[in-house]
Length: 539
Image (cartoon, rainbow, N blue to C red; front, top):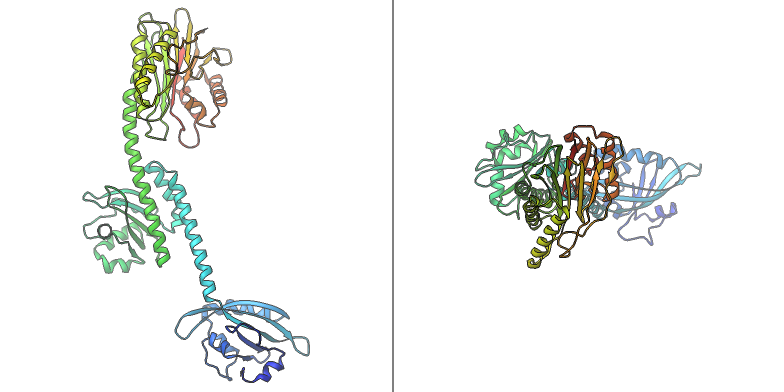
């Protein structure tokens, strides 16, 4: 091997280092003999001391053994043809550090026209590649976090959070996740995955990793079981039962009234470098916050359902010749208690009054107004059979309440008075969507008739009335707009779907028909609005 001080070597091959970056090394490699002419920088880049006796094999010897097969596979076709080339390869320096080098050059022919020399430059691209890898790593972390948080953002209940985390295990690189409250009464709040990290197999001991992480506020990482054994020997068997090999135990901060800890298990050893630890801490925080929100949601949901259930009638009263089915579905926005309601009244004369209404909003105020309007209508229903007068009385009441309210509320309402002796249904509506009537042997009809203004809009409003004869077997549907618009926000399409169900299945049991009406209009996700429906078969 020859060094750069023999300038004749450079001239002989028609190659000069002048004009190149000072950080670059230069070489001429004689392929048939593996002799190399190079400068001191080329030796330095390879971690070698300048030595005219070194051949190409010495440079190749600096390449990590695991990289050699791939490098030789790349070199063989490059050196067998003439032309330019560019390759990267790694070398291990004397201090053990790895460097990435890039060489760009040209294979030139000898007198016989065959490849004889490879000439080029070599530069150290370690920092450039490190920066590129860091950029790629950050992008990958962002993508992983986005995949996790996208599912969590749409999760409302604990069940939905569990589904979201289970669907994000691939992004976490994990096989199981468990969230616990490590307070005085330890509680498992969430568990998912295939590791069997179940409450019965995870013991939250006073001096174990879960309570230690909660007490110190510091995350704990155990790349393999031996690491856990050194710190918490008493927890090894319990962790072994979960199937986890590597485990991260991360405290969850910023959650009121909860000493939350997220345990993330892996089914193999895990390096847990600085970047991975930072990602897992962020992921654990996102999961913990979602669990906290879901717990609040579930408490509010149970309270709301109890409140709603207390305001809606437990039993519907109706007279002879009427069979009734009813359904109520809560929206999953807000506090999940709304202003949709229904009721029925068996009047002294044997007629039945069906009532359905909708107060705007999904909050306690809407529910309170709903209850007051409902009781007002019930109070007047036994005094008069005039449905227009009933709506006028309800309207006067809502207008009076709105005069004293900081934020006025309005309500729609539909009344249907069924007279089994005359076989008539008398309707009146205050801004409400029309009813559907399906008579035997006839297509169902949407009862589009004149409509009055919603309750509470204008004091002294009057309400139009219309009447329909019916035959035995007629089916009557009264509903709120949540049933018709939750699927596609299109009232007419919703009415058409309901007509399709009534026309095709009106002879079904009324309870079955009610379920089918819900199914035909149910959105893929949660209901966008409260849904109330009354279904009556008139005999």
